[in-house]
Length: 356
Image (cartoon, rainbow, N blue to C red; front, side):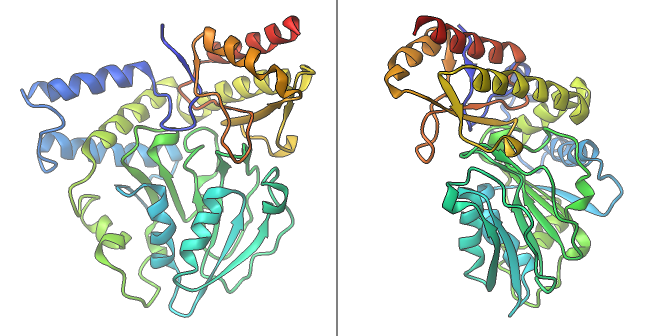
């Protein structure tokens, strides 16, 4: 039985991505070689890299606007360090919004390189909301935020309009909703939350903001070097990039971000409506800041946990337990999760109500 996969990451992917990836491992492009053994300099893989980078900019509406797309290694956590190395001037400073675990991780790394101002934080409330009405210093070299907080289930709905570069970690909601992506000067996202398997990280950067720090940047951390090398300064993570390309192709066939956003909103509306209606459950996040990608909720009475857990496991639901920082349950509804899976979960929640 195919599971209803609510894992927060590595994420659910479209079935056709699994099938095409599996075939590529056996025989890539009828070459008689596996994708795992071909040269990253071969024309077949160079074509994969070029199409993946171009398709990112197409889907985000950033073609011809001075942006470059890169697929690098190291995960989004390495970007916590790469961002300040490339954007924070020597003796400069950066501004950060603290909305969760990954935002605080980015703040920690930035502090190694210079003054790091936290403009607002919801840590004292266990990150149950997105801070509002904060002020970003105009003399900061850049502003960093996290659009969606996987662990705590919050999502930013508005972003400040600034005269300094805006950087956004979009690891868990990239390609899930329509936005004016040109309001960001640098976007990064680990693939494994909504785009592909773990092992590669997407970076989309406006070239004109680079090369202005006055500091020496180690080669592997230098965006300009990676751009000059067409995202292949070193051997790239071939398989995760190929699987990400397949996912991007699938997304384009669905109608792009506009089409998938409608489906995502329908999934989120269905689940949150049941959380709010059902007296056995309660949400953990301020409603105005709820994430359509990661819905976090608790049982009103933990005595019902054993029964509820048995019910959702019996129908093939996987990956539902919440992160230890929040507890309870977390339903991650990434692009490839079908609406039918959400209906199954909602039916289980109703079933629990009928049994109690």
